[in-house]
Length: 514
Image 1: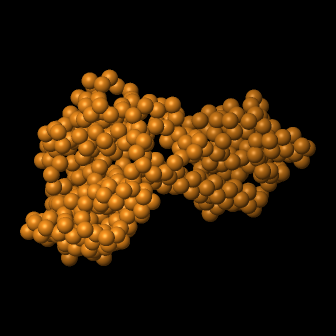
Image 2: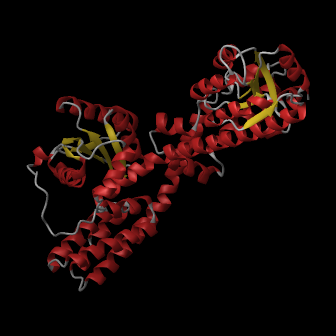
């Protein structure tokens, strides 16, 4: 219903229009009346109506002044102007404030009803437009983190952005291209799954308040931060990240920290962190490595292929045969383009093979090692590729079968969290992912639906309703509002009743009576 304020200095007109119009029939409710513009503006400030029907000639503040003031402070209000025959030219000045509706005195119910209907339709269109814009903004804000991740991933790996691209993204992400940044690259130690990378990334973003972008690349987590805190404080924060991650997941991480530099050099800073991680061979597992620890500052001028081995290792580890084969094909394409010496090319191939067989089942590792001479004696790059394709397919298919059991364990953990938190009105997929498991919510949602056959939110509601039925069967004297609050519906028993009826076909009261 649109709320209406009626303004006229003649009492008989106020009373006549108030009683003559069937407001509800025209989608409106008469919120109040006022005898002049000053009184009307005070009511506008107090009640914020949707429509004002006002006389044009009034003592003190007249209708035109009222339109001007209200248009500035309450631009959403629609005006319907009442004017005498000789006042129309004066009343038409209100057009500059967007007033479109004029009624000539004396008027009747039909004319007022027609004006109310037209104005109501205008308001509905504007509300729909505002709702659409708000929805678009919400969807944009929801997808923006994924856009940020993709931009960072593309830039530090293989995509070159021009000035126009950087100008666009710097405005979108609200930072300048001369901003000084650092990169943090996380390498998890021991046996881990891809969701642990999301976990360490989320923990790092929570603790490092200067995070600009974050993503995962291969089996690394990458964080880009503003260089805004002293080195000692930053190292303390990094130590806190390791401590929190160890506390939750009982595993450690090696962290490479780049030097500071402008964000436009993020790719070079990324290569710094990759090189630093290679130095972990000389250190105990876990810890922080910087370029100063390795003595490497300059950008590499090598013509060696820039293929990131983790782009192959990740899909093999997760059991994704199709993506693993595509990554392997890309690896050999880059080797062919590089045109290195045969011995050097074979060293890359053998190195990749060694990384792959570490993912094989323990009882298969020795047999894989014994096949290395076959690879060394490969007569062509195509033969070496066929050899690795056989290895990738075998290991990836085995890992796929093994991973299915792990996924079931994650879903079991989610179901346990649901059962322990049914009373919590804030229980949601976002809460479980962000505050309890430190995992990507989209990934968790898809995994849960794949294993259970239904969306997480629907499962939560069905579990709550099933528990409500059990409790009502045990105690028929149970109050509905108490039951609603104990099952996470807060102080909204009406919503609980609606959900209960949706799932059972009866309201809680009807269920208790039966």
